[in-house]
Structures are given as structure tokens and as C-alpha cells.
Amino acid sequence: MPDRTWLITGTSTGIGRALTEILLERGERVAATVRAPEALAPLVEAAGDRLLPLTLDTTDPEGVTRAVERAHATFGRIDVVVSNAGYGLFGAAEEVTDEQIERQLATNLLGPIRLARAVLPRLRAQGGGRFVQISSVGGLVSVPHLSVYHATKWGVEGFFEALRAEVEPFGVQVTLVEPGAVRTDFAGRSGELAPALPEYADTPAGQLRQAFEHGVLPVPGDPRKVARAVADLADRERAPLRLVLGSDAFALFQGALRDRLGELEEQKDTALSTDADAPA
Image 1 (tube, one colour):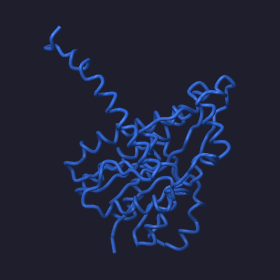
Image 2 (tube, rainbow, N blue to C red):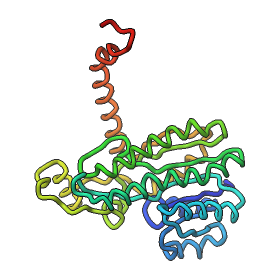
Image 3 (cartoon, rainbow, N blue to C red):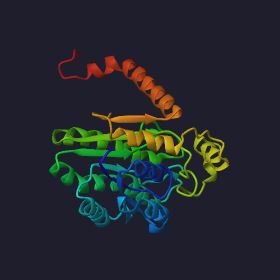
């Protein structure tokens, strides 16, 4: 059986909750963060001292540091970190408020960056570890009605891709997990919806709003299967930079890459013509 300690944020519901349950079933140790501690009560009773519940709002920098330090002090090491806390903000760019934008950035982008910065000294000191960032296919492609959410996820993609190259010399591996639509409450209780502007009603953003509100969009992903794939990452000798999960995520990302490559090839002559030594 594996003998690892995991630190996971956002474990009340969804992927984070399923991952915590799977790891405890496998006999591993988990420091699990939630905003409401009672959410983990049933698991604490069953898992005993293999589960450390931690109350954390990832927008609180000092709270992030305290959670990392307490997890390390309790278990003696942290082998795998899974940054999972986050939520969806729904609305066109004009519809969302400044407050909503700031909260989304603080949770989905700054929170993961702070967590990585807080835990990396521990991983370096022990000679290695793994950092898994739960991103989204929304960090690889974009749709209207989710512009600010995409801004956070595309930011996460850039940060953790660069971070991987920075920390590999220390034996630390970084993976971005890219799920498609998963059967969680992402678009329900966990999401935030901006007030609608009537001007957008008949635009792609307004049409997507209606599809979300009426629940007509396909949601193929199973949270427990996604969580199992994340758990299995720790057994790979070398984890991939990106792990795409879901038939929808695969098709969307594949299509986006083909479109970008085609557009790039069309621009080749123009791109090369702007070099200083290119013919005038």
C-alpha cells in the first residue's frame, strides 16, 4: 500500500470530495481543506487520524500558509498537493461586477499561486513531491458567458507550465488537470451568476446563459472517475504536464489545437517577414 500524505483544497463536494474518499479508501493520509468544517465530519469519524480537516479560505494568504504548516507538522511531510478549490463565474464581461471579478481572480488564480509558493519550500527540502492543479478545459479553449472564468484558468495554465520548468531540478513534478464538464454543482450551488443585460439576450453569451440555466448542456464527466485518474497520477514515474479528462474535453482541445495550427500556418510568411534580416 502507498504511504503518502496528500494536501487537497476544496474537499466539501465534487472532485475534491471524491478524491479525498478514494485516497482514504486506499489507506493514504489526507490533509483536506474546507470552508465549513462540518462538511468533513462523516469522513473524520471513519478515517481517524489519517484525515486532517483544515478550515481554509484560499483567498486568505496567511490562512494558506497556516494550512500548509499544520499539515506538515501533523504528518511530517507532504507528498502530493492538489489545488482544487475554485468556482465558476457566469456572465458576459459587461455583466459581471468589479467585486465579482476580483473575487474570481482571488480564488481561481491567486489562491493556487499562493498555495504553490507556500508549499514549494517544503517539497524542495524533502527532495521532491508533486503539485497537481485542477484546471479545466476552460483553460485551453474559451466560450462566451465565461470570460472572467477563462481569464483565471488561462492564467493558471501559464503559471503552472512555467512553474514546472522551474521546480523540476528539485524533483518536484507539476501537472495541470483539464476536466471537461463534470457532474458536480459547478454550474449550480458552487457557481456565481451575474445579472443579465437585455442587450446580450440574443447573442452567443445570452444563449449560453439560457442553456446553463435550463440544464440542457451535456455533462458527461463522472466526478469519481475524474478523481480516480487524479489519484493515479501519483503512481506514475513521470506525470504529464497536462492530463485531459472527459470525451468533451478531448474533442474541444483537439479541435482548438487544429484550428490554431491552421491559422498559424496561414500567417507563416507574414511572421517571417518581420525579422530584422528578412528581405524588405
